[in-house]
Length: 220
Image 1 (cartoon, rainbow, N blue to C red):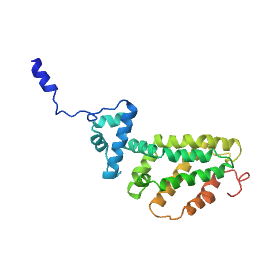
Image 2: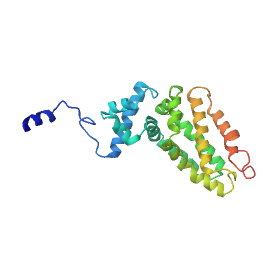
Image 3: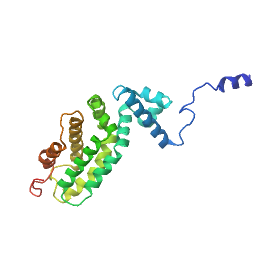
Image 4: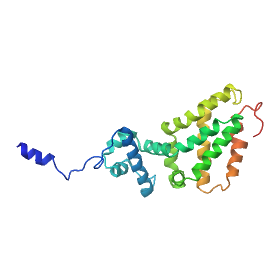
């Protein structure tokens, strides 16, 4: 009886989760799931990729994907976070430079969108075909909180210095800036706008002045 049980359970043809090389830790597991998601996005498109697709690509059960990320939108949000780490760093570098808050914010928005537009993979994320999924993922608390964490301290300092309008909540201002940046980025990727100068003009003339104290911030 023992020998029969051993023959049944020790089946060399039985699939092993994660293939032949299971991850060393949770960080590696998450990275491999995100790698699998990116391969699925490139092969099937973002909108057509399901949690089951990601699980099959990574050779795990779908519950493993849910364990690490939750929903399909969360998977995409974490992919976006990983791919935009360098973009976020560029924004933070611009915001920590000297000068008026409005000028630093203008440079940060302009530089980050320019970097995204030059990235083949990020252009896929913000293409018209991926628009609905990307917007949904960008609304995820994971992605939104990461961007907000970068903008918050600079917005708070600007408010303390009287550069930000007194009635504005810095967190709400940060969220609004993210939405505007996404909208302009999607327009550029879809070909609705051709010149980066037009984007900078929108930021300078319409977006940023709505955040700043008009008494202390002349036109940029």
